[in-house]
Image (cartoon, rainbow, N blue to C red; front, top):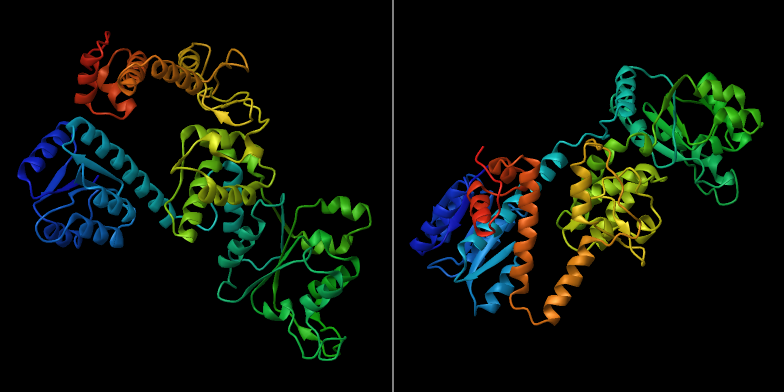
Length: 509
């Protein structure tokens, strides 16, 4: 992990932040002015940048602008005075992660830097995944079989029939077969036979001569000619009209075809890859598909699994599509919380990978905040979805409005520690009407505020921290260092919190 840079002309602030971060085992590098930091950026970037806004020479805002130009995903925390509202607004407009108002509490500063650090590490992970993303993503055994088949077919020109449900990625597989074939340097031409009107499909496939029909004012090359030397992908071949099936069979049999209205045979040097979501054997029995064409196409059959057969691939696909969507729109990449990701992985998604991609586009545009919870997903997904077998910390309980909220923390803690449960199977909540912990928190906050309780945030915050730390200590059998790691906080932080909150049962590892 790269160090945290501290840029401030005030030596005392640099010293305090350096010492506080060192106690959290975080490496730092300090600069007394923005110019030196800008020079250092030429050789590399920090994990997080903390900068004062007003310094001699270049300001923190100028440094922020320089950083964002080179490293748009790098979190920058700006230090500013309480009264400096214009600067705070300018900092956010310039892409600052957050700002620290002077005078600041050192613990809160460290906590903020830790949040920025987590953000930076997530950004790095997303960038790494995006940079190394192959043409087809999949770690499930069913997809590994597909990859092996593509590998075996890499040096072949044989006809391939790809079967699979709509949206499962058949064209991606066809493109991969072309890319890894001897024809890779030649054209890849795709045609969805179900999307072209019957009267135009023949011309689309084989082209036409000038004057062949009304409106044919010039000779037109068809898809077979366009794909010469390369690959022609015929999607939804099961929907091809019967008379055109006969013409396609002739091309596959002798390698020749005629343009519409033409009299001169043309040679077709094309590899055909076909795909369908339909059961071709069933259509042959019904007399809707030529049996001889079926056998011509079905030389090598490649079945693509549906998304419900490869649910373990949903997280990596989701992260890929979110990164892709954010890049297309020029916005920051949204992240799915663990709960939202597990909820998403539990859905059937009949539209398969295409539906997941469309959902990620919707999330990028419509979901509030950078971290997406299950309740932020489209209402049609969250309404009426069963949560059986899901981790109750993830399986959101439906509210009366159909939105999804996180369940009771204590219910989860009890079920997660129960001997009857394994890592993947959890006891269900006591009742579908169980009150969610966020609803209880809201009610408690409302009661305290109505009663005039001072420092409500501090009171509830201490209770929240106490529950988290006690639960973590139970999980680690009292070992506080292990608990700190599990919670994502520093060793010194958990020691201080245990003392402040009077928590018993902790021991050194």
